Length: 499
Ligand SMILES: *Cc1c(COP(=O)(O)O)cnc(C)c1O
Image 1 (cartoon, rainbow, N blue to C red):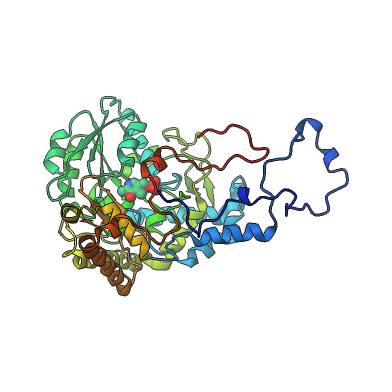
Image 2: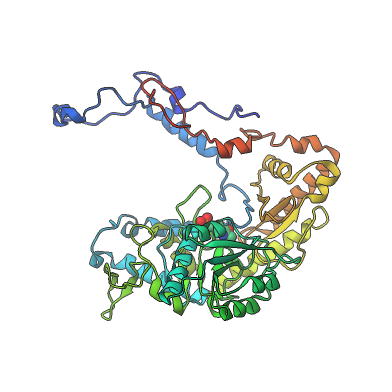
């Protein structure tokens, strides 16, 4: 494992020199210390690194240059929709009226923000064909939990306590089964059909009086649209269960397919994916949830309401006793929601449909270009993403998908999602999005094809990649199981800290 290269710099703690502190409090009152009660004063100085201002600035700016971002290069990370984020959104989210609004101001002072949220709910309802929308959940995963809790409340409200099962296809995102068990349900995993779609027969035979819900990702995490979705939704309805749609792949169906009209009862939006908020570094995101008629009474509180006089307000505590309650503080990650609103308005209805059409075109083009160099396990018309596999390359050369992904880094690309969905051997889930040019798609395809060739002529070069990054191969299992994210110790920092 090689972990340091010349571009990796020492930490601020290692650079620290006693007495070099650049932090000055301007014009401190003479009796500043006396104003702090003795019990609240430190007995020892805090264990902060001591550096001057240029050292600190250069440290962080140089670190930022090690970052890979959508703004620096192509980022085909499947299932994540890493599209370019228009700077217009950033301008809108930073407008003082939105950015500096205190979350506890009275409704009268927050009319602009409340109106934006109300309008965004309507736009998302229109896009999805749903009856109503909550903007509260902080991400897709929390949106799923919100949706499944509403489904639970629905069944309970009808005195139906027998429904304990949630059916999930084996190609689903890990958050689906996690959501079901967090909400107290049993997850039943249904294997995919040979064509990569939902196995309708297996689903239908698993449906019964104990089924609370099915969770379907459409298009699936293989980038395939469920062509027999109507049949499946009929069967779900007949069984008295509800249908949840994981909407992470909404980018593929904007203006083309409305889940609510198709018969889904509830879905989440990953607005940071579809509606362009910078993401990938752990947030913040937003995971609004749209519901059909039957789930409206259970929406989280408070909802954003519009009164008859045209003014906006938040629902009052206890105003709607059927609500499942509050999922997080205030009304959601408003900054992310402002970006989504700006994106939707900038595109309009026809523009959003073009987003989808271009994303689908880009994915099919790239898939076509890679067909001779890689296996394409589910080779029918894909939506916004597709799976390629290095299964044959591995058999012939020993080079794995992980190696190919690492080698891409040497050529300045972020690797695609790899080994997901789990059902594909040596899979790479590639999602180019609508924002890349033909030249970029070709350059990426040429690079992948060249790496596939290299795997045959110089496999060691691929297996030992990356060669140009500041950090080489990490022990991924150790990084996941025992992440060591904290530097220690230094003078004054002898406090034990958990590993
Ligand atoms: C991203 C994603 C999720 C989870 O969404 P977060 O916003 O990351 O919590 C769920 N399902 C699928 C298919 C996804 O791609």
